[in-house]
Image (cartoon, rainbow, N blue to C red; front, side):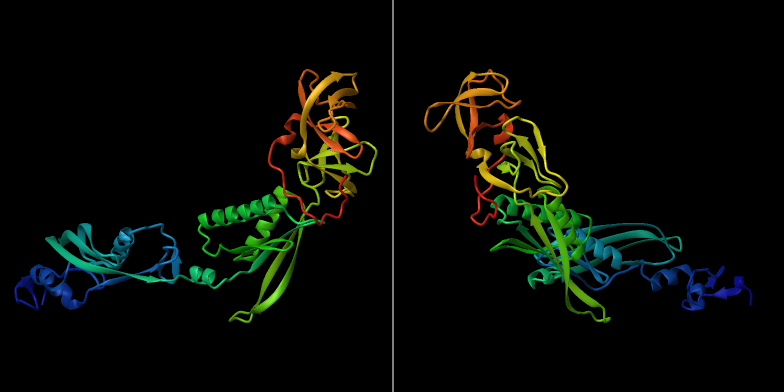
Length: 384
């Protein structure tokens, strides 16, 4: 029998030619257009869809992982889930569709899906309604956070003193900023478990060892000092690989910017400007730059005098010569001859002075920029 003599196996009408369709059975190819359209739907949809949403961070579960979507009411998530679940007939063409969400309650969205297209050149229009149920769960990441999980600890300490409040606050800010940047890049493994004050400073617990090292490096880069690390064997994973926790011990310098010290040489007090790498500052006697050697680094042998913000304003009485000026002692109200540093403007009426064991010294105009760190009572280096 030739193809021109074929008959539809369902209605018996003659079929001009067999339809070719990928994956179709011989019976499907033999059906006439009317029976074929009556036999199959333009679109297939599940009876309902469940969307898993983390009640902690709002992430949704897709495939075998949790994904951050930044959604609030999850309507867009429901639309995407329905879109992925719908199946359009393989032979359909010229498909157009739209989805209208209907919120039933906080956790249920009814999706009205309208489709139109051609199936064997026959215009079709269908509407399916798919309920989407939002299931509130806890993602792996939030579960780890709630359980206090961490892989690294950054210990913020200081040489011969306790880190002050400003240093601890800044270390905490740096850690949170770095975690936020890492999260923004899509790394859901990045989180800060906790920060806590300790007797010697503060501890920052982080989710990964890489994040711990980055935080330690950033703290040292901004606040100065050094860091070391050591591993502690925690357990073995399911594959038998050893799992370690790493402690990054940050050691901040003994001195801080804004502090005034007297090095062991004979050139007088120094206003500390920076402790990154090695200590840098300004000589209060001459106004010349001061910088420690590589061997001394950020911890030269010196006596502490105080902080620039402990200075007192007093009158500039007279300029004696290129090396000395007269100021009014703010405590005794006597006129004192003091060193004239290069930065002193001889035309000003008042200056800021600091008292050392060797007398009064005039501070630079910019010395009061910033805030005074808190002093601690366990400094090894002597006060001036």
